[in-house]
Length: 503
Image 1 (cartoon, rainbow, N blue to C red):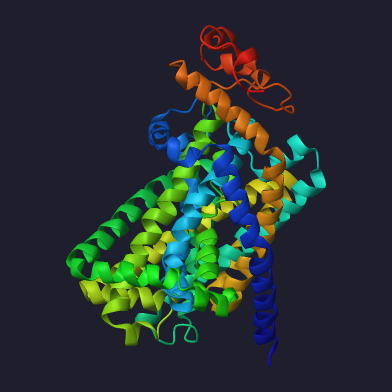
Image 2 (cartoon, rainbow, N blue to C red):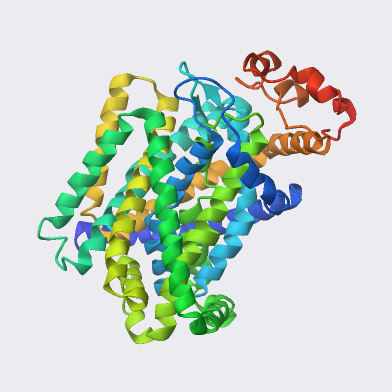
């Protein structure tokens, strides 16, 4: 056994133990807890999720970004090769029922996504040019006062996104060429892909957060719409097979004898793991993007980030699942021999012919690239939390580009294992933090709800939440400095804050 094979085996064992005995229980429990505590905010406020996208940024400054741009940054990270290759891998490895468990995890997890993103908005910090930064490292440091825990989270996120997920995105981009170049990993093709992705990423990341948000605001909507259109076409043209597809998925999802026989590799485990990898709800990544938005109330961006979870799993992942499952029920003998990107490519080829393979190759590159820069955005925000040394940042950026290159020629199994492990530990730290701080997000939600019932466009003021740990933003004088109404009078004329139910 060589060193690489041994590393794959060891990381696989750690991965299995982490998810089987710790993370699944935490994710489900926290998601259900916050669903109940928020009275299922992820369902009650679906309309507001969409209306908030049209809100303009409230803070001047060339580098501040809007709610929509922040959504696109987080969606860029969420909507990547995991939505395509990850779904195919879950189906091939765990069975068609994994898709159903992705859906269940999406609904439950979106409540956790709301809480963590609202907290990120409450404890965000503003830089010199008007842009915001924030995320779990920031709210752990400010609200809990535990810098060591904040640094631990930041390090885990960097390992996860800069060195885990980005290596995986690069690998999937390279492997998408297998249809054209069967020996792509040994003839220099993977090396060329790695160099191209590293150079393109360098152009964007050295341009700062504003350039990242602009690029993702263009790539993500265009590719998502095109991908959805292809999935709809596949579904419509194979409409007679759809009842069989759903019957197969639900029968597999609730085959309890099979699940009990091998829970670690079951549809439940694969569905939850791939769902978490894909939509990131509760793991602490999306709050880094949520904090950057300039909005008038933290809950607004919390709702928008819940919408991002739906876009990722209920929309994009479902598109991938439907294309793969149509192929799966039509040609199960061939489908069960494939995995990852080759499975997706053949599934699309099955529905729309050779054009589908070419489209999927382009799509995987576009999604991989948008994820690379979205993931880097998260990593840099946390790196800057640890140190603001410009030379250290330069070295960090070069290291990230090297990882992208290395990922293009790395092992598929090792890439998945490392991404899962880093993500798991990061999620555990964040879940503990949001359980401890969740009451403040609930208080912000109560404040938002009161103002909405009074017919107001909600504006958040930190002083209106009794006992709220000190924040850098959201003070009365600061809010009014940016052209909003006189906040105290604006709120108190319609709401008695002393008896408004925040206690």
